[in-house]
Length: 159
Ligand SMILES: CC(C)(COP(=O)(O)OP(=O)(O)OC[C@H]1O[C@@H](n2cnc3c(N)ncnc32)[C@H](O)[C@@H]1OP(=O)(O)O)[C@@H](O)C(=O)NCCC(=O)NCCS
Image (cartoon, rainbow, N blue to C red; front, side):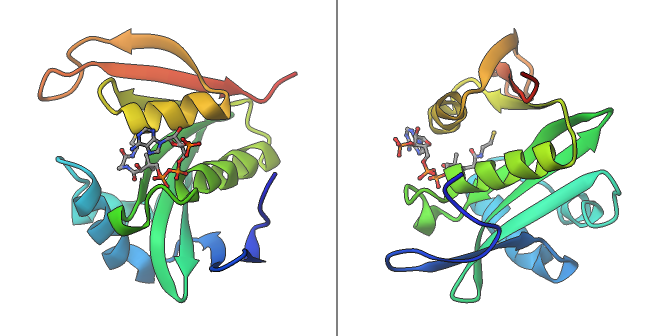
């Protein structure tokens, strides 16, 4: 993998990858609201810090949280719950590295696979997941409130 959890020194910016803390809640919500038309509510995001199956992570640059990713550990499988990179910090590799952190976390915890669900029109996210080796397993037509399709994808950790 091209990163280490903890402090890494890149060519220009240092990025710290760490588990999210409840004190990060406001900044997570800020990034969430900038990223989605129907963002999670304060209550939904706050709950992530109480659920024992939820593993929220953040990326921090110069003391500022610039991205987050959350996966859930359910029945031996990891499920990607949410991921977003602050719009000012996109296209710099943070989304891919956050996914690597979550995938490594899931593998280290003995999960069999990671599954996710993404809006069919979210080309950026789908491209990212395909590049990481996820495969499409099915589609749910008109799944979302605005009747857009959901694409279900997964990556297996088993050989
Ligand atoms: C999806 C998201 C997390 C990607 O984060 P990012 O830091 O910008 O992505 P990276 O710089 O790590 O790019 C990794 C890969 O993602 C894909 N990608 C990212 N942005 C893209 C875009 N605007 N168009 C097409 N592909 C894109 C590419 O495959 C890219 O690889 P490449 O740079 O070699 O082409 C980010 O766009 C985001 O936060 N979007 C809003 C929230 C969201 O949609 N989350 C996913 C919900 S399922």
